Image (cartoon, rainbow, N blue to C red; front, side, top):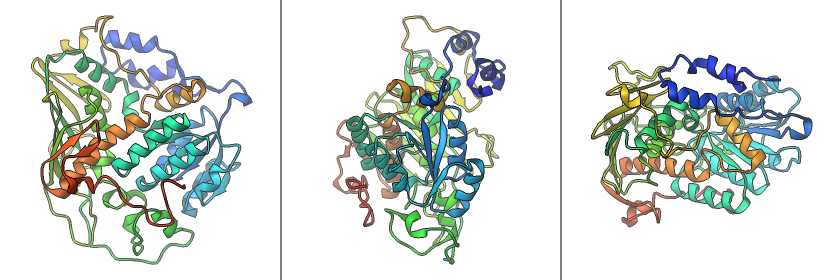
Length: 435
């Protein structure tokens, strides 16, 4: 059965024809093939969803165009029950390791909280499964190196859920920047939503049907606090990096794509407000600056506090997004919008000899196309790791409160104290080597 999202007509009907994209680029997009849906039962991979919260269920609902949901896993029975109503024939598990033992599972979608991404993805690849993992790909830089190594070793297909790499506006912006449309690129400004600054919070009884110890997994054991879990987990350093690693895994990824370098060589950063004692720990407002070997300066800052309400505009009128500034003008891009200092910067067609970036118009579709072809996805482990690294460098600079020098080739700081932040020892019995 064809989904409207999987057909060219449906693709254009979703807003492409009425967008601000130039006509020449629209014609190129129309000429690109759609992702292929299964033609037979033998062509239908079995899909397991690990982490059945709202994001995970959304990913699985998107993925069912290309396969069959055969298994569900979550440490929260409430989430598992909701997902079970969507896919009543799927098996249900509370321990993801059981999923890896199943012969009917070909693909694992990892929709867990951030601190579980690496262990679940490692276990899946080692079990011979391909992986679609939500962003940010990792909790630490060391975890990213492990995932890159495992993907190379296992030759499994992995897609990081930084889906803006499959958005036409972002790809166009990066292609124009890479081909000198702005002259020499000087700065890249990234605006992210501010995080939440709340507290203090009190411990509470663990809800029935919720495996709190398993949820914590490799992180330090603490008393149960409702605000540590589900939608607000990302505002704790223990489990995430605030909006720097949440939205930053999208917009900083695009900044790096446009810059075209593996990573910065210098980073400075600081929180701009103090957090409330016994409340959320990840910086809610911050300013970070990266310098690349080419001299390009990439600034990442949060917008107004508590402004995020689902809109891309905060109360002061600042849009969340990415602005590339060169000697000959600027291009700003965010979801659903691309604009330039001069409209002609967008309208002028790129020559055939220009550098073109990986083309994907359907992030989940690209993943399943690569599952079939065994080719590299638009956002594989290396890409997801390198872009998450930019975010992690920002959080480390914020937490250390000083300028740091980074070697993107060796992936270490010149500062021994800073290098202690590259990895976190998992709580026993969890181990990256034996998962």
